[in-house]
View 1: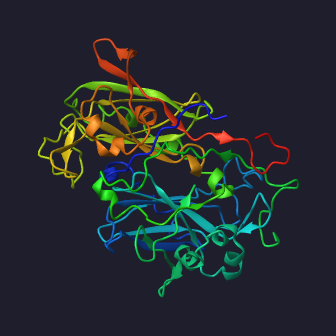
View 2: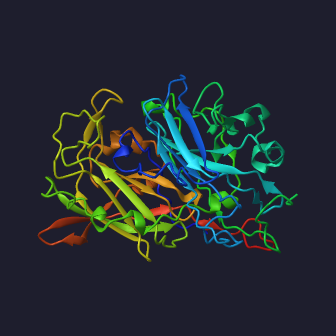
View 3: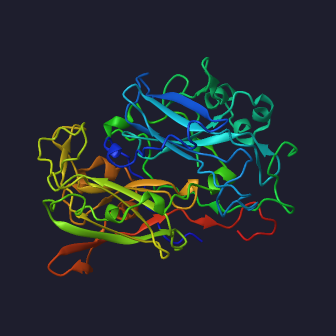
Length: 188
Length: 249
């Protein structure tokens, strides 16, 4: 079944900014796209300090819940949506992603996943990426029925995956690697 | 239940590939010998995420990102860089042995003196005006990649007294699905710094550690020009479909 031993993960280290940031990395869609939302947040360590050398990556469906990918058995549905965002954190630990809100998704076992982004965090001191999900604050009903959110046994921690509305527009999604309010991370 | 799904499942259900969950291969996040893990490794147990649409798909980033000079790190400036010219080539496979074609690989590394071209690298070794140390390529239809570069140097770091990183090249790969995303490091055979390198040794299994070490290859070596190294990268494979009725396991 699985014959070859896989290659282990190693830390991204402190110097990935030589190669990995792309000029349009944070822009899943151009800023002036109708319906574009700006997601911002900071990454914190277990002492509550900002993490200024992390890389955030996001992956998501398009607004119709489609992926431009051959393993989406529904077909691409005409989607050419990049779906991928990448942003290094700055000296203040902040990142930003500009994207469109994804649609909900059907589940193989039945039911529906609420609109979400899969989020990877890479950093010096992380020997493997950690993966979380971002959900939307205006999807209370869908979030309550989401199988992934519902699978989090510590119900009080589910809120760590729900972005907050920003007063000036856009969404705020902070990531706490460790300590009080530690973000829920997934075994993918 | 699915009335609000804009792109509903096809009749007969949604059949997705499922990716293997290798155990004991990746390093643990909490690894005290690598000091930076102390405040960054999450402490709470991970929540199991079954693979659904978002996880079995992934960005298919292609040729638009890559220029021909991106895979030859010795030709990115007017002059030749200092150091030992090498060829690093191999295949990207999944654990079932299937090649992973058309996938983006990004690399970064020190120069021959062990210095990164990065503002935060203060190792007092010389920068090389003819070497940036970054590359990109896309695997071909057989999953093959090939870089021409300079052998990176060892460098000191402040993890512990007199600590040195074994020479390595950073590799970033996407594979075909979100589940296959991998950032790792390629090491060189016979490097005496490896047994004391906590990043490398965070990988618990000796065979898995050796998976990160390239092999010298006389076949890939170009006469009177460059030494060759072969390094295959193996990503998670696809298992029998989990949700398929009557599917084989």
